[in-house]
Every structure is written in C-alpha cells, then in structure tokens.
Image (cartoon, helix red, strand yellow):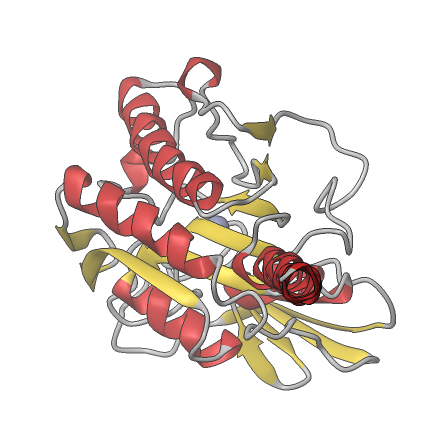
Length: 290
Ligand SMILES: [Zn+2]
C-alpha cells in the first residue's frame, strides 16, 4: 500500500511538474502572442477623426470648431487606448503628429503617455525597436484621392504629391516606412473608408482598419455616430493586439528614390490639367525623413 502510495505520489509529482511546466509554457506563449507584454506606439492625425469632415475644423488652432474636433479626437483616442490596455498592452505611447497638435491634457486616458508640442529634436520621438506595433489613428487618404475626406499629403495648403521608388504614397506609407526602419509594423489604421482602403493596399490584409466615416467628397462625408465609432475603435484596438505577429514592417528598399511635386489648383478651371509648380527628386539612404 505504502509502496503503491509512494509510487503513485511520484507519478502524481512528475505529472504535476509536467502540468506546471505546460502552464508556464502557455503563459509565455500567451505573453508572446496575445500582447500581454507589448508596447504600442500611437501616431495622431486630426483629419480622419470621427465627426471631422471640413477644413474649418482643422485650420485655426483652438478656435471653437477646432477645439470641438480635438475633443472628438480625444474620444477616439480614449477608445483606442482602452482597447489596447484591455487586450494587455504593457505600455501605450501617443505621439501627437498632427501639425497644429491635438492633445487636450484633461481628456487624456490613464494608462498611456502623451508627447505633444514643439520643437522636437527629430521625427517619431520615442519610437524604437522595443515597440511591438504602431496604430495610425485619425489618418486620411493621400492627396488627390477621389472621395477621400480632407485628402492631402503633408501640408494641405501646398498640394504636394510624393513617390518612393516609383510608388505614389501618402502619409500612411510615409509613417509606416519610418516605423519599418525600426522593424515595427503598423497594426491598426483609422479614418474614412478611402483611408482604410489605402492602408490595406500598402500594409496588407492583416492590418486592422476602422472606418469612422464614408467619404463623398473632400468636405462631404457620411458620418457615423460617435458612440458607434467609439465601440468600433475599442474593438479594433483589441483585435489589433492579436495581429502583431502577422503584420510585417513596411520597409522601403534603399537607396530610396524620392520624388515630390508641388502644384496649385486654387482658382483654376478644373477642366484643364493642374500646372506643376516645382518637382524635387532626391535619394534617401538611411532613416526615412519625408
Ligand atoms: Zn495628415
């Protein structure tokens, strides 16, 4: 009996050791693939926020319309930060990339850090290879996109278009390439439907896209109610944590052949081609700066 008990307890002992080992292995697996220890970097832009569809919401920093648009954005951001945190992100870092800045301090969500203001010593401050994924929140389609709400690339007043290695690219590809330089993939993009199509075209089918409005024209959109976009963004961020291992960093082959054209279509007859004011071409050999 005692022999039986002894050998039985040994079997139980080795079985429980195996069980503990399996549980530990499962925890490590889950940490690696469900994002329990992941760091997420969020890049902001205002034109693709819920409820934003006209330039008067963008142009004048801190006037009533702009302030309201920034409040819409902070709600979008809250949903995304909460989604990432709920799905286990260890660290969420928000980089306020929109030219006139968006962040309203008293509307920040606990559990994230927010970098805003100027001047800055270099591009995507704080981003390095320790981050697991990047979210482009409130983005817009590239300059010239049909039905793209507030479509532009870089400064909207300049009307510029950009090509890298012969591929016309907008801000989604530009920021994805900057992140790709550090080996970090874009895992989530939000904006209008044209933005989401552009994201999938450049970044592949695994990137999570969240449509918060449908574009009819540059300043005309079918807006989705903010409560609905909030839920979609929250769920999108949670889902994005599960695609980290599937999303590949967007890397431009060096040397990068870059081309930029400026043009001006203000006050011109739309039936005629838009005159190009200036074309610039250059080579990028290291970290992309656009
Ligand atoms: Zn932009």
